[in-house]
Image: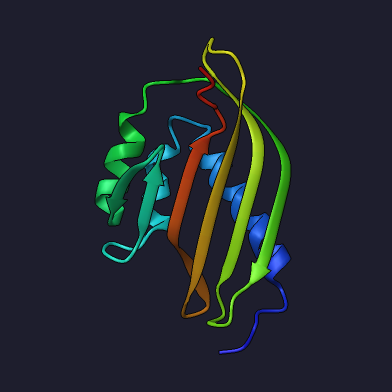
Length: 130
């Protein structure tokens, strides 16, 4: 496959769609449709999860209801298999918690005329400095 020339549009469009669903507790279960039943992986704060059903289980276990999010940067790169690598930097506030910086990485893999999220890594940027 060749490099996808629309990688930036695809990356920004995916991030917009993903966070619109994630940030609305009523829409969050629909995120399962962005992952593959067996081939998708998520690393959430160091916890490794595989498969759309297990990923949805993790996402539904999150108890916060209100999210304020500010995106700092969305960087995308084309991949040689036609996929798209996306790196997101931002600031996140859940319910009444203080805001925290976070980083999230997505790898989108082509599937017919669309994509699925093959890899999703999320980490709050909190440093243990004793």
